[in-house]
Image 1 (cartoon, rainbow, N blue to C red):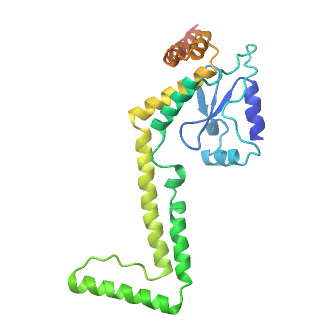
Image 2: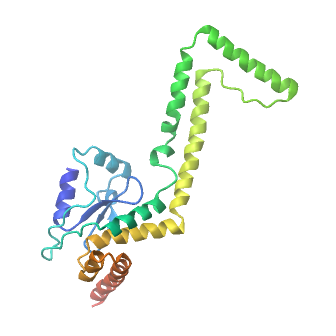
Image 3: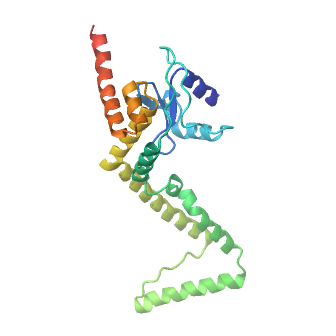
Length: 240
């Protein structure tokens, strides 16, 4: 069903692309204006991401445009070497310090919980040795003031400590990712990447000529001016 929707949208001149943030998909019109796809479909972002993952065939980053209601549209331009190089540089700036999977507490805790499971299968002698080691550490702390991290003595206590520590680590990483995307340089790179993607599918002949000549800055400037003037024309029509 979702693949059919995307294909039908492509037939009517809409473009479905993966957004700059993980798990976000955008639907964009021929003028370059876009909305979050999960809001258009009234779905939670997580539900839409799961639907995308369940597709039998991968979702293409750019779908063909065949009809926009105003006649045949020009096909997307091929990616030149200058375009690919520029997109790679922007990706290096935009890439957050942690991947999405690195910010999930349950995934961070998995290898440690596996070790706890192995400890549960210890023999009685091994458990006794661990208890004696913990007792010695407590004596050192009491008698000599030596600060020693005493490990948990039960599997349940170990699980609780792992969950607490990994939750704190996950929250710290999420804050780091959020702060990364709020940086001015990253926001500028995101804006530039959106413009470059829009230039490939632009119907403006001047923009297309600049892209074919690998004049990326000129193409983005022309498209930016076009986007600034388009809302003004719509506002004039409403006033009339």
